[in-house]
Amino acid sequence: SSDKYPTHFVLYNESVSKSRAILYHSGNVPNETRGCMIPGYTYNGKGAVGESRNMVTALHRYINSAGVKNIRVIINNIR
Image (cartoon, rainbow, N blue to C red):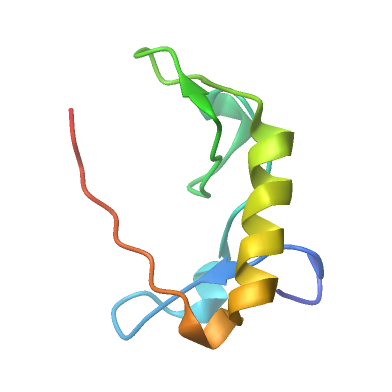
């Protein structure tokens, strides 16, 4: 989390600084984010996701139950 977004998880590692503030948050289309992750249960193949709020809630529950230090995010660029 961050001071500005206390209920969001911030993604960072040795290559991406925490100050970049890459967050998980709800949204459905690319113009609802500026480089953050907008997860969803469905994907339409054109950049939009569906049921994003439900997925963010599920991610928060999972991350909190497992412990944030025990979570590893792997991103693959598939196009």
